[in-house]
Image 1: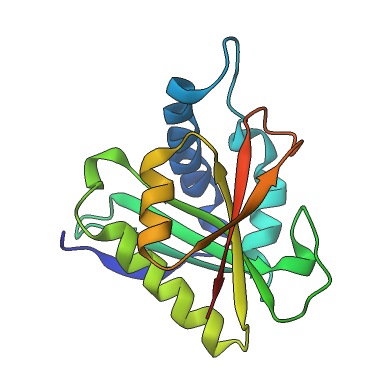
Image 2: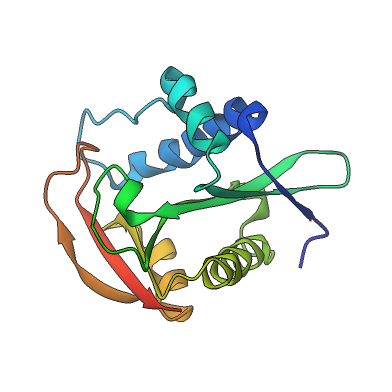
Length: 169
C-alpha cells in the first residue's frame, strides 16, 4: 500500500475534492457516448462546501506526506442524497475517487474500508452507491468488496447509464 495518511475533510476542501472528482469524471470519456461532457463539480462549489460542512456528511481524504491528494471517499444518509430514499438505516456512498497515479496501491481499499467502518459506527445497516454501467474497473472493485448489483438507474441527469450497488454493513 502507498504511504498515505487519512484526514477528515471540511468545507475548505471543496475545491480540491471537486478537482479530484472532475479528474475521475474525465476518465469516463472512454465509456461515454459521443459528445458527452462531464459535469463540472467546480461549478457547484457552494453546494459542495455546504455538504462538507454538514455533520451528516462523512468525507475522508487520502494524502501523501507532502499533502498531495490521492483521493477521497464520502457518504451521507440516503434520505439526504440527490436521489433520496426514506430509509434511516441506509447510507449513500456518494463518492469514492482515487487519482490514477494511485490506482492499484491500496488507497481505494483504505478509503472504502474507513467509510464502511464509519457508516457502521453511525448506526447504518446498509449502504448503496451508483457507478457507470461500463466502468468495469470500479464495478469489479465493488463486487470484490461485497457489494451486490441492485439494478440500473435510468435517468440520473449524468448522461451515462448507471447501476446501483448495495451492501449490508
